Length: 288
Image (tube, rainbow, N blue to C red; front, side, top):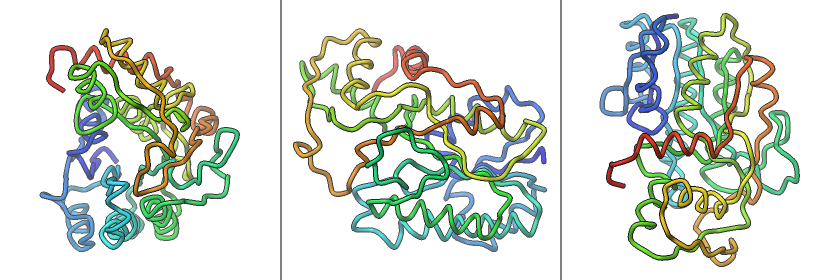
């Protein structure tokens, strides 16, 4: 199992896995993206797995343009569902383990307590429906897979809320941010570390798990925290969701219960502000 295929390696999570992979010397990670391996091409996936003796697949590939997906449902479903089924079918026939990354968007956000893995999904967007369909397709094809749902992902790379706020905070004296959507920011490096620890745990317990950093906040709170820790003098004005309409519906409440992954794999999860501080330290001196 020491040969591990990482798909979607040019994204935030893929970059994070690449950065920390040296701390997990028992694994040889093979990083691919659509330019080197198109996971919608099942024969290509099967050939890659066979050629490199892949024992585990970490699927970070996804269509994540949430608003654009509303008008691009076919492509969204092909990447988030059909391609995931391909991975599951190839893994089932080759004996490879699978860790697939999913999202809080499988829930409608109408909950009042942290969502558990066995809570009924009810996605409100094309993106959410495609990710749920991907979960179902994977579990049908490869029941021994692990699915990790996460939320509010950010990192030093790619396009994300932290980088956007840092850029706006240097350009403007004030920003407007939604204050009535609750969730938890997740530093990609923390999720990457957890994924590799699951693979390295000495046991592999299939099923759905939730992982975000600890704590609860709104996007408004998140923005205030970013400016505070970055030392930027930028005022944050609270907005309602109604005052900031988007093409796709966002979950109003997407806090995830992490009890299962902590108890099963002994994972220790940092507070979101602590992880944000580490991310900002790594970004110091870099352009946003």
